[in-house]
Image 1 (cartoon, one colour):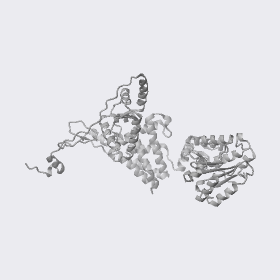
Image 2 (cartoon, rainbow, N blue to C red):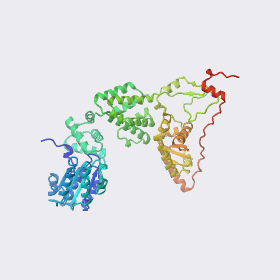
Image 3 (cartoon, rainbow, N blue to C red):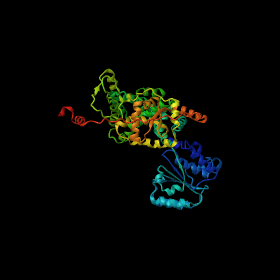
Image 4 (tube, helix red, strand yellow):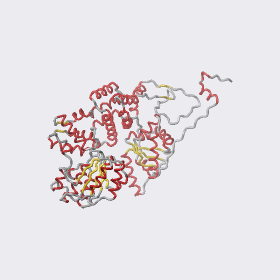
Length: 569
């Protein structure tokens, strides 16, 4: 006799055994006990989340002879349903019986009285695959349902159903089962089956199952067969072409440090192991996301993949904005990986592109040799009355600066932070309506193009609007470094002109950390009650520098160059 699959053997037999879907279980359980059963139900949601199982449990419960503990599993109706021989419970797979004749035959038989139980139940699986004529025939029956007949429709694609069918059913949307629920259920079943399965392996299977309990049980069944009932995380990685967290973090470190040789060797070894590059790419995105979260909140409870020490090590090589930038790049390449002829070659190109982007040198320009070097580029470049010489700084410090990747440059910060009194003087002139308007304008960032605008959009995406007034926007930054960057005079000036021209927000920007904002908010409420709030901060917008008018001779020289023009007296 063939071995029974785990997902069949451990299919839930009553409401208490259902994993997840708490609100659905409670609603249907109460309806059965209070005898408030509807004539038609629609169960929709992703595959493997318990739609058909719930339909069978409901079918057993409505005919159970012990309504207080339905389904009891002991009465004649429950036993017949468990054995699949109950004459009043009919299951139809609409994927096979799609024609209108099949539905008309169902309708004719539905008019007959139940043979054994109180209700006749029709479970129609994959109902969205019914033909147009069959759907119309079913609709007519749902409009005028026969007495003591219950229809339970199940589908993974409810949008393909007629809206009139959906409106005549009690609709229940099944959600994906949480990873921790899947993990705990797998470990419980493994113990019953005498299978050794470590917690990390169960967690990995839960991730692979993507919210589907049936898929999770099928994966564990396959792993148990492969490993002779001794499942470890390495076995799951080997079977499904996955990689460890250490391999992913190692690759990211090599990318951040521009170690091209290591990156190429790693990718080739992944290819030889048969690693799935699409899943690998998704894993990198999750790791980068966790780095940003941990950098902001510094709570290990927020980490699901990384350990705190791993996140700290990663953040030594890259800032928050760097991690977000790389994650966005990897998200943009998901479709390319899916359609590429060689996923390994495509992934190599992606990683090389990230490293090339990191290795672009920063041009250092000074007005004269005596003046200090200014690495900031002004948003407005005034036209000078006479051309100035460009002096290239060629000393050891500048050489070291150009050798650093752009990622390292983003860590630049000026130690300036707003005090509580400064924040209060801004909050007193803010309003909810101004904040709502500016949040809408901020969405224009999604349509801003050009590499010259990237440094503004990337840093703004690392913030949220805390408050807004007629003349100011108070941003809550992801870290003190980001807040200091925004508040620095040179960058703040550039950001002002960028926001005014690209986002249509003609206001001054200020930034604080989340902790400083919460502290100031509490102080604001207390002082508002006391009537001791400070005066509004006097805000002055930046002005563009006036361009010096050029003479005709200067315009000609600027256009053709001094060597090509001879001025006649």
